[in-house]
Amino acid sequence: MAIKSLAEFETLKLELEDGIALLTLNRPEKLNAFNPLMNRELIAAFDVTDADDDVRAVIVTGAGRGFCAGADLAGGGSTFDYDRRDADPLGQRTESGVYRDGGGLVSLRIYDSLKPVIAAVNGAAVGVGATMQLPMDIRLASTEARFGFVFARRGITPEACSSWFLPRLVGMQTALEWCYSGRVFNAQEALDRGLVRSLHAPEDLLPAARALAREIVDNAAPVSVALTRQLMWRMAGADHPMAAHRADSRGIQARGASADSKEGVESFLQKRPPAFPDKVSDGLPDIWPGRRPPEFS
Image 1 (cartoon, rainbow, N blue to C red):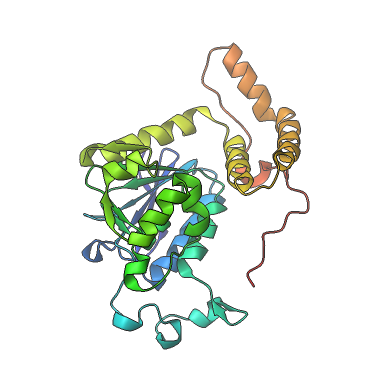
Image 2: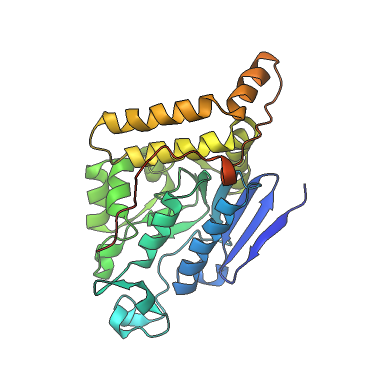
């Protein structure tokens, strides 16, 4: 199948091939450093992938040698001083007198994704380049990848909702060690501590990510995948398993009566690949009655 461009961006490339969207951070001359435009375009890219039923999974990687080397420090010492930055309309992100963290807005958007998200970490992933991966579902890394939660070394604090995500992925002890020290560590340590799922030679990284996405695309019902993603992530913060039981019960009831459920059983019995008819755009049941995202305050 031909590669199709899903949208035109300045700092990203977003392409679709056979159900898999490849989202590439595309500032290779800057090691894909994160700037205000990339911030806005990442959010827009996930709006595009959510709205397109042809997209069944998303892979995120970086162009060139890096995944994302963190925030673009071209602003010098005022890089993180929002009151002194006038190039970005930060006022649009101000609520209750607080400038909302751009990396956090990206993480929250990825958290809400209706499609599974796989990180293919091809090189340096530092600062927001490390934290933006945390709400992605599965992380694969090149043996040449490097990671760093370097915020304390820059005189700031962890961002992009990483204080919620990172301890859940690697445990509190490791999360605090990495963030207290701010040291950059290699891919093997990331694997050993549970940050990434597997390591691959650089030339094998994207093929491995595609193979994983292919397993999802070829075998799983898109609506079921979207609901499963919501169940797993939202229940990570639930205070009692009853919250999961309520959502599970609604999900099973809605999905059990669906055309997808009928197709899933019949294709299994007939020993053929499934052809699930339901679409995320119009087939996603509400298993969270009355739920509203928390407001920023």
